[in-house]
Image (cartoon, rainbow, N blue to C red; front, top):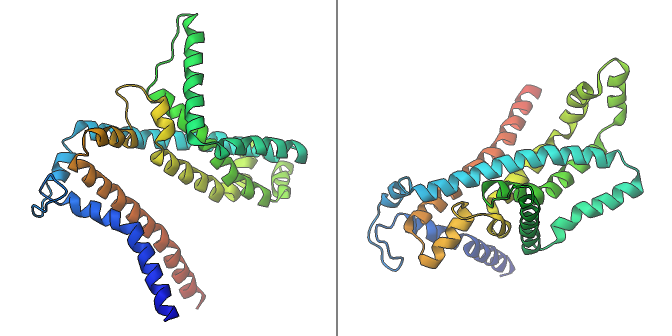
Length: 272
């Protein structure tokens, strides 16, 4: 009985998690526009998706902003982690606390703060004939800002595991500091850098609140586009888009989880 209850509870959790996704996938193949009626299997919403320029533009903006913000945040965050790691303990503790503050803040606080900052900067630049236009650039800056702490926290543990003697040995045999970093330090911290990049990319794809406050008219990401569509009624093309995104993420997870197994199998065969 106890074993049955455990299995039933696990099954119930999976139903709660995946029932909405399965419903969405089913509706993406429904030829009827209404969700209350099954009109037969059809791929017309997938065809309509690739003809809808607004949704495709929102998807393009989302992927481009996520990629650029993740890359820039990874570079700046890695440099910040290197600087923090070289500081004394008390100084490093203080600055690490400062790094953690944006993560503890509610997203709406960060979003409003960035919006007010851009407005204040625009008022200041207006005295010299300049301006700040809310749009792609402000969204990119906002995403870089909230991604930085996650990159720093991903890289710091790997930096603490690096043996400083190897870097010093590279300097002793004539390597320049830059060359020694790229040949000795970077390979050791690369797992932390990659995890920071992937985390930043994922958070940027998923963000709505901060994007909503720093975006301008005519510039949308998928999250803000879907939010605006909800007011008028969600188009069936959104079901098709969400299905494609879910399948892409699922395939990526399967590939990532399959690779270590193949490596282990290869190592075992070589061993024996």
